[in-house]
Every structure is written in C-alpha cells, then in structure tokens.
Length: 192
Image: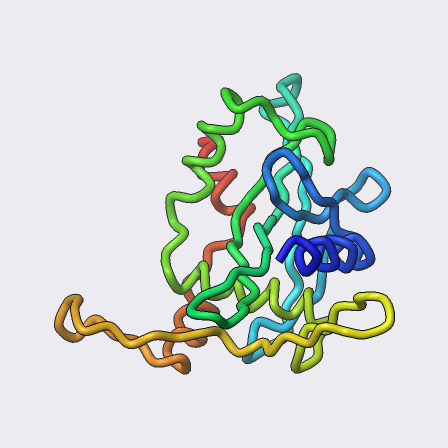
C-alpha cells in the first residue's frame, strides 16, 4: 500500500500539485505569485475554476491563500483496492505554508458552510478530471509499468435512510452543477 501511495504522490507532483506531508493534502500552488485558474470537466460540461486565490482582509489586513485541495490515497476494502479522494480546502499564508490552526478554523467554518453532497460530488468529479488528465482512467507511472484506476465512483446500496431521499447519478450531476456556490461569493458574503 505504501508503494502505491508513493507512486500516487509522485504522479501528483508531476501534475504540478503540492503535497503537504504534515496534513496529507494535495493542492494547487499559486501560478507565479498569482491566482491559478484551471479548466476542467465536471462530468456534463467544461468549466473554469479558480483553484488557488489570494485574499486580503480589508485594505491593510492579513493576506491568505485559499486552495482547492484533496486528500488522495489508496485504500483496501474487502480485498479490493480503491483510490479514495476527499475534496476540501486548504488555507496558506504564502501559497505553500499552511495557516496556523487557530487562523484556519474560522476561515474553514465559513468556507464549508454550504458544502453539501452535490457540492462535494462536483469537487470529486473535478479532482477525477485532474488526476485522469481528462481521460477515462487515472494512469500512474510506476517505473517499468503503470497503475490504471477507473474513474467511475464506487457506489453502495443502503437499507436505511429517509424515505424518498435518494438521488441517481444523473441527478447528482444536475444538482452539483447548479447548486455549487462560487467561492468568491462565500468570501464576499463574509466581508459584509
């Protein structure tokens, strides 16, 4: 498992992503000191997404960077291997160095207030697009051979829950693309 995860981290680095060893997160660094915009495929359409953005609190306030991030690692479930992708946010002082935990907590709470299943699914599809380089599978170079991972999300049936609270994959795509608020909107609402 460790060898698989090392190969994965090497491939993430080759994609231009930064790996934070202390927190196990991968994220996009700034692009030459500026915001980074990435074009991606969310499953049904192509879109532009700011994946790294510089913010300043007021005219003379502290500067911080917001990064779309993911914790990505291989796991074993019932003798099968899966690539686990957990989308999230990382906040840094300078585009690389994470904010101290005390400064990160309040920002994280405001940032994540509107992250529900459709939003997380949208982020998951985005990261799948990045890792697969826009193809139908994620291919990791591992020296003399490659590791190939399907991009179809794993699903499971549950025998409990709320009556009528079920979404098909098509509905998840539809909700994810219409209900995900822009990040800039979240920060602007906080400044008011």
